[in-house]
Image 1 (cartoon, helix red, strand yellow):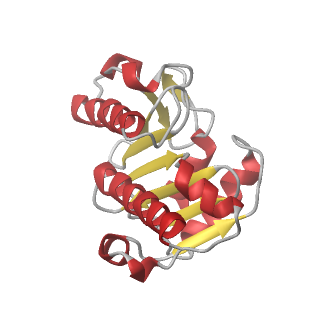
Image 2: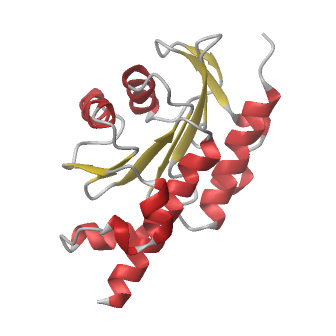
Amino acid sequence: MNLNEFYLSQISDVMKLMYNRKLVQIRGGNASIIDRINNLIYISPTGVPRHKITNNDVSVIDINGKVIVGLPSSEWRMHLSIYKNVENAKGIVHAHPPYLLALNRKGLKLDLNYLTETSLRVKCLQEIPLINPGTEELANAVGEAAKMGCNAIILDNHGIVSYSNESIYHALEIIEAIEDLALIELYGT
């Protein structure tokens, strides 16, 4: 099977960027891109340190979750659920940003209008309660939240997932902007 090298390199690049930006731990977080023509999802692997992911490590699954190549992230169900519920989603990023999690833990809410970057990039922010990672239950809850039109979803005491109809890099920008806002709101109050 011929895999799309462009997608493979974007997944490995985004995972390294997230790790370097401290948005994920060494084996945490995940990212994916959908190839809607071939109904394939390129997704970060499980078990590979985020700063060392190469194109050869990236996994590929079909739209039903059948593994084509590699060992996909344990959150593959969540990615599939978003792609099935948001027809124009092109890329998804899931991170564990510490400032956002601290804000979430304190029960504080973000004011998206406080920072230009969030007001421009984030359509709306949905929040779902704590659900075990990697489960069908989490996937269904995230899919339903995404269907409401919010391109960023806080997973209570877990992290955040964002999607973009532009690119995987735009999905990452959304999370970066939200994490920057969380830092500003934590220290600005």
